[in-house]
Amino acid sequence: MKINCLSCGHIIVLDDAYSDYEGSVKCYTCSALLEIKLSEGLVKSVKFLELTRIAAAEI
Image (tube, rainbow, N blue to C red; front, side, top):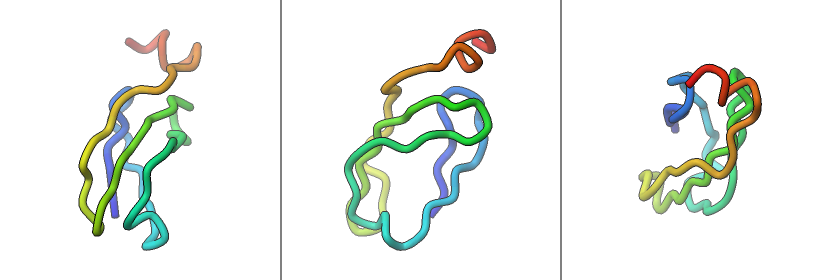
């Protein structure tokens, strides 16, 4: 499964263990923390939990 980082647009690849997941994911490119909710392999919601100084400087 793939989701785009809301901060930098980087594609975050998640394996099948995340098909029913609710929690945080860190973007390895800009270090932004995203809160995601996935159900049956589908994205239900994605929102910012926290921007790091690097990600905040890019906005």
